[in-house]
Length: 425
Image 1 (cartoon, rainbow, N blue to C red):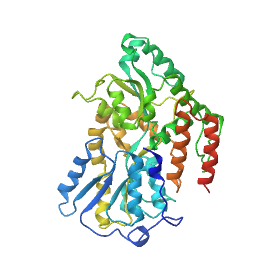
Image 2 (image 1 turned 90 degrees about the vertical axis):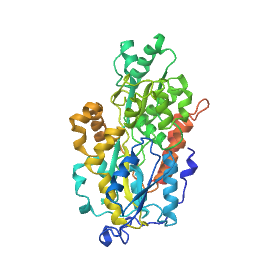
Image 3 (image 1 turned 180 degrees about the horizontal axis):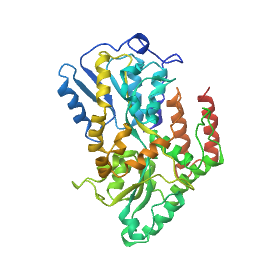
Image 4 (image 1 turned 45 degrees about the vertical axis):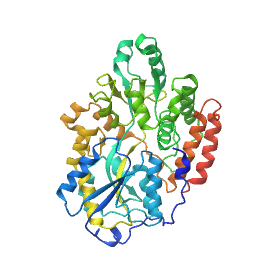
């Protein structure tokens, strides 16, 4: 989706974020009754079941789901629009992990008392970190995400090639598969390259997988480097040579998933939720039982995933915050997360679920996914995240758009300059 949708004026907020009258700074979360849950489009089809489980147990505290668009940028835009007018329309917000700092700094979500969420210590530490701003809790991680490489195992086996661990190995593997009669028409690789949040993720993974960074551990931009250039150039050359099909410049998660399920891609970078959908035997997937999952390849070694996932937060302007807090505890519980994994293959935040024997049998990628999440890199945790991600998308998309794309070196030089104006310490 075009990035103009996320160019919104930030509401004024203090550097410390907002405790609010019902937040941790002001005492217990108060108010009980019906609430509304704002979330992105439920592509899994299981959210209704999860909410029904709550509603059946809480007849006087019913949860109504407000389903926002499929595009992450549009979801964020609608949530911010409601916050800027201090609307109580949304009670609980399903936030992309990288939005938490921005929403907390602008006092759009309520600071949560950690003692009311005793299970935080049982979650993957990297996921809990995404739910905090200035060491204070503002959300609870309910799903995590790490990028995975989906590949056609049947075709790689037929061609006699190993699962690639690097980008050049992936290019060579595709050439061998395309030499087969059954692989002649297949496209090699696609991720998410439309100008939206998914491009920030894919660009970051390309840079990190080449040994570079977008923003360093010191919080300063450092994207005009040889390593970052090597990562971006690999993507640009992918489009130029046809290794990445032209259509992929329009791909968000769902169009890419559908292309993979229809048998049009040999390799596909996407999130864990794809596994259950691509393995359906109801006729919706042409590759059920024919694919497998591996860690992302890097330029010359193992790749680095961008940390994804979603946190549930309470709108600062919501009524019935006590109900909202209990709903978040319910949805983030081990029981509900396990039920969700079983139905959707979405990555949980409970560490124990990655070692569950039954789940590992059903989803053999859980062990490598746990390692992927543990070593994943976060996107910049900055207050002006909307402007930062827009700048990244503009730079990356300009270089990838072929023919006539921006020179990769110039794109990174310009991006460095832009990020320096947006990220201040």
